[in-house]
Image 1: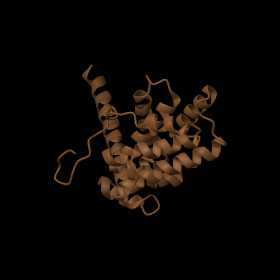
Image 2: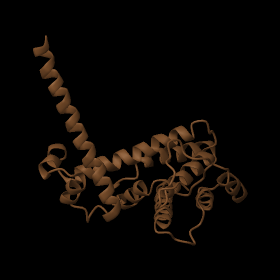
Image 3: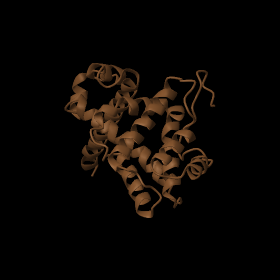
Length: 225
């Protein structure tokens, strides 16, 4: 009996060790890309950060591009699922939209590494109809169907929304002093979508709490703010 269990136990440990190595590579890549950007990041940078050999990298990913695709998909989907939970009980498409926009912009404060990664990975999001874009299109379609939104052109609206959110995140990450508050950006986007000015102002200004699972930003000395 012991002779049968031992090979299984060894195999199980090997699988766990392999998964831990993969997780280290993924975490290292996310951190390095957040600092340097995708194009400037090399596989050697990633393996050095993860403290693994080059061979270990290729045991898990055939190229840097494949790893980046994995990272983008994970980062966007995780945030998207969290947003879904956050607005599950909100029926108004305009309010749902404003909440999602504001929480996404605030990720620059709550999780700068995630935000920098997302901003710098933008060039790899080849289509808006992926990741958060799927949810954005869904919510815009719901708003159009209900008559809440009346955009002149859906595709151009998607481009403007994505550009505004990414620019706002980047501005926060860079410490821009005159950057508009997240609710003002959400308000302008709602107005672009055809929501009357007074309704856009009211809807965008609805108080929102912390996103579920959203970490507090830490200061240089380790304190929360």
